[in-house]
Amino acid sequence: MRLLLCEDERSLSRAIEAILKRNNYSVDAVYNGKDALDYITVGNYDGIILDIMMPIMDGIQVLREIRGRKITTPVLILSAKSEIDDKVKGLDSGADDYLTKPFDSRELLARIRAMTRETATQADSCLKVGNITLDLASYELISPTGSYKLANKEFQMMEMLMRNPKRLVSTESFMEKIWGYDSESEISVVWVYISYLRKKLSALGADIQIKAQRNAGYYLEADK
Image 1 (cartoon, rainbow, N blue to C red):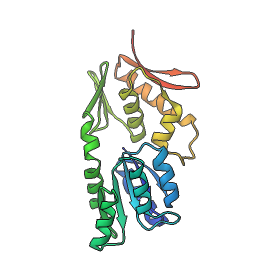
Image 2 (image 1 turned 180 degrees about the horizontal axis):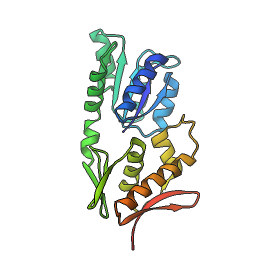
Image 3 (image 1 turned 90 degrees about the horizontal axis):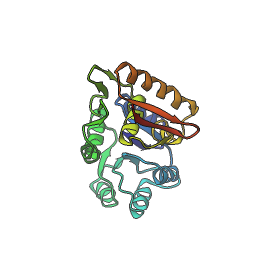
Image 4 (image 1 turned 135 degrees about the vertical axis):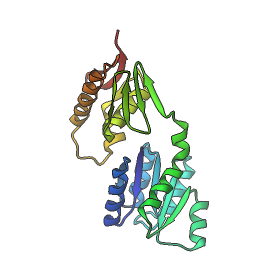
């Protein structure tokens, strides 16, 4: 699951980002309202964590702008403002939830789970292509002969492929969705993780393969 974190206090942003990544979220972080709006507009996020007091454009402005553009991604506001009027303003502007600082990391994670629950429950708990099943809850890649627990990025790549069987997933899509726009990783990292997944599929006796289309991307194809 991919989140956008919009928090201008760098030390707090790094701490939240670390918590989220330890809990298997993919995170992009921005530090002002303008960048937040730009990322939300072009990105594909499952949830947004939005500070109110940000430079250039505050969180309420960002929230009203994206709701005005019919962007329905769930938003959790983080704010030091704890007055009822501030909470009402945030929720009336289009936020799905409001959490005041300071907060416990367990509550933050619970709020995120609640905020994204509808999206998560809309998806099946497992994906199946050929004789391979991907368990979305346990991150396991399963075949009749065994299973592998996938690392976070392996899991996200396999999920993208299995949600789009026989359809090409571009290398750029993998980079944007999983590594994020600000990643310093080379695009060759996609090939490295594809190699990991191919080895696991082979070891599991999969009747599907990850095929490459030169200079374009990858897709799943059933063995003939």
